[in-house]
Every structure is written in structure tokens, then in C-alpha cells.
Amino acid sequence: MISSLLGKESDLPASEATVLNEKLIADKKKIKARERNSLAMAYLLTAFKSAADVSLAYETMSNEWPGGLAYEVVNKLVEAYQPKDSVTEVKLYERLLSVKMKTKEDPRILFEQVASIQNWYNDGNRQVPKEQLMAVLLRAAPKEYASVVTDVQRVKGTNLEVSHLRMTMNMFYRFVYKRVTGEESNDELALVGQNNINKTYT
Image (cartoon, rainbow, N blue to C red):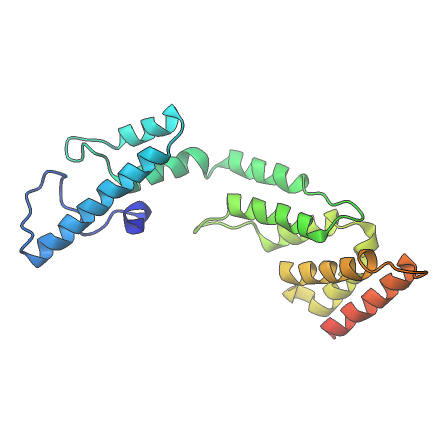
């Protein structure tokens, strides 16, 4: 069924009413493709909650395919909800600027914000540039992380990835904010954390 959603199947017959002989191997494939399309359309129509989405499905219905074509519905949904235009780029810029992190907040919250933006924007033809992601993460990271982030930047250079920043900030967070016991101070723990992080990248 998934193949019916991702694009037009090569085995789809010319029309929904095309007479096929299930005893012929070529026709068997066409019958299966038609059945997959019908099932996919049924699932799509069941899943739609708004009249606007249902109307998109109706737009794909024709004399040849009165029940509609699932892949065409998916294409229309992408056009409606993931348009590739200048407005999308503006929204990307706005969402990146909104990424924030508080001083004692778990870094996972920061990286979940970024991942959410990537999931919304990325597709087979476009991705948020790595340089933009790095700039956003470095800007949003609280000043307490400056030394460890600078160290991993120095070590990795142009090979720096989001995963490196995530691991570094998570390690720092665990050492500084999750192990404050007895008379140990944040400054002392920060030093221990930084030394451990340095060992990881050297």
C-alpha cells in the first residue's frame, strides 16, 4: 500500500474500470496495484478530519479514476502543507530564531527544537544547511557551555557535526547540573566536566 502513496505505480491500469484477466501474470500485477490504490484511498479518506483535506481527495477523482488516485492526493497534501516557496524559507528563518535554551535546562530540549524544525523542513530535495543549524545551536547555548563548545569546535574544525555538540553539551549538563552533592561547587564540577569532555575529543 505504501507504494501507492509514494508515486504512480507502473503496474496501475489505464483506468479503474479496465477489464483485466487474473489468469494473466501481467494483469495480476495490475489488479494488485489497483487494489492497493483503492485501499490507500480508503485509509486516506478515513484519516482526514477536515473538509479541506477531503476536497483535495475529490480533486483527484476523474472519469478514468472515479475513486481517486492515492499518490495524487499525497502530492496535493505536500503542496498544501509543505510548499517549497519563499514563504517557507521565511518561516524556517523565524523558527530557527525562536530556538532557545535556559541556563539549567536539559540540552535535549534544545536539540528537540532543532530536530522538530528539521523534520518539518527537510525532504528528499532540501535540508536545513548544517551551517545554519550550527549557528543556531551556538547562539542558543547558554554562556556556561561556551568553554566546552569552543573546545569541541577547535578539535573537530570543519568536521564539526550536530551530534558532536549534542554529546558535548549533554556530558557537560550531567557533570555540572546532575552531580551537585555535598560541598562540591558548580565551578569545581564544571572543571571536571570540561576535562572529561576534552579527553573525549583528543
